[in-house]
Length: 582
Image (tube, rainbow, N blue to C red; front, side):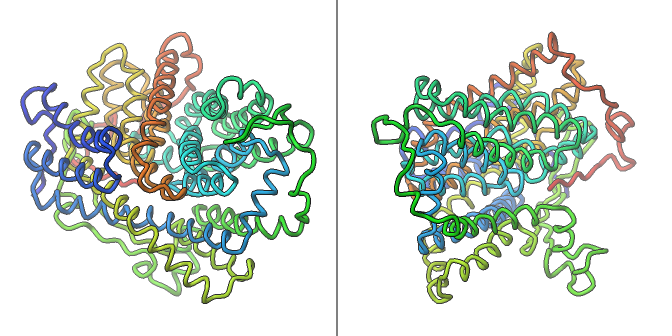
C-alpha cells in the first residue's frame, strides 16, 4: 500500500511549515546555540524528525523506521567510507614524515597562509570536488591545511567556505545530470545556465575566503594572486560548462587554477607574509624548505597524486560501469553485478511513499528507495587503493600500516555514528515530505520567487548535505512553480543547483567531516556559527543574480528547447513515474 505525502497536515500552511521546521531548528539550535556535541544534536534532531513524520504528517511507522535505517546506512557507506579511507592516507603521510615535506614544499611556493589556502582549499579542493565529491574535498583539504600549519578550527572553516562554487559540477557533473533527469530539461542547457551564474562566485569565493582569514587589509596584500586563482577557474568553468558539458568542469578548472597560481607565485610574492599566530614579516626568499630535494618532494606528494588519479578514474562513467560489472564491461564476464554492486530495495519504503501535486507534475510520483552497496566502484575504494599503493611507496611496514588502520577506525567511530544519525534525519525528512512543506512555503513568495528559488536549493543542500540530493528532491517542485509563475524553467531549476552550492558549508554532514579531518570533533557548533553568515550571504547573492536574470540580465539565459516527455505531454498511463537519481 502506498502512502501519499501530506503537505498541509495541520490545515494551515503557516502552522504546517513551523512544525516541519522543528527537526532543523532542534539540530542547529542544539549544535550552535546550546553547545551540544554533534552526535547528541543529531540524535535529538532525528527523534524530532521521527515525531513530526509519524505524529503530525502521518507517515507509517514502519516506513519512517525504514527511512531511518536507509539514511544511516548511506551515511556509513559511501560517505563514511570516503572519510575513513582519506584519513587513513593522511595518517600514513604523517607516519612517514611525508606531510612535513609537503608542508615545506608548499611554503617554498609561498610561506603566506593566504596563498596556501588558495592553492589547497580552493584550487585543489575544486579538483577533488569534480573528481569525487561527497565529502572528499572537505576532508582532504581540511587535513592538508592543518598539516600546513593552519589552526585546526580555521582549516575546517576555510575548507567549508572554499567548497562552494565548484559543487554544482561536482562528482563529474552528477548534480547537473540528476537535475536534467528530474526536470526533463536538457543537460547541456542546465550546464550552460550554471556556467553563466557560478563563474561570478568563482571570482568572489577566493577573495571572500582571504577576507575571512586576514580581513580586507589582508586581501589587498594578495589581490593579484586571488585574481589569478579565481579568474583562471572562472574562465574554465564558464567555457567548459557552455561548450563541452558538466562532467569535467571542476576537474579541468581546478587543475588550471592550481597550475596558474603555482606559476604566478614563481614571479610574484606578496610584500608581507601573513601567517596565523605570527606578525606580518617580509616573505623569505630562502629557508629550511630549500633543503628538501626535488626527489624528496616528489616522494612526499606521490600518495596524493595516487589519490587524485584514483578518484578521477573511479569517477569516469566507463570505469564505474566496468567496476560495477554492468553488461558489456570486461568484469561482467567474470563477476556478477550482484557481487560488486548489489542493490537492496528497502522493505516498507521502496515505492511505498509518493510525492503528489503540487510537488510534482504527475498524479503520483513513487519514491524509490534502493540501497546500492557498490563497494568496488565507490570513491572511497579508489582512495583506499591509493593508500595501499602508498604504503610501500612511503616505506611503511605492513604490520604498522595495519595498526594505523585500526587506530584510524577507532578514532573515527564517534564521527561515523554522528554522520549516520545526520543522514538518517535527512532521509526521514525527505521520505516524510516535510522537506517539501518547507519548499512550498518559499513558492508562495510571488514576484520574489527567483530569489527564493536559489534559497530553496540552499535549504535542500543544508538538509541533505548534497547538491545532487537537493536537485532530486526539489527539482520537480522548481519546475512546477516556474510554470505556475510564468518564469523560465531553465533559469529557475538551475537556481536550485547554483543556490544550493552555498548550503554546502552549513550542512551538518560537511561540518562533521571538516571537524573530524582536523581533529576537533566537539567544535561542530562553533564551526556552524562561524560559517553560517557566509553561507546565507552568498546564497542571497546567488538569488539576486537569478532575480536579475529574469529582467535586465535575461539575455544571459541560453536559448533552449522546452522540457521533453511527461512534463508537457501528460502523465504516464498508470499516473505514476519512477525517477531514480544517483
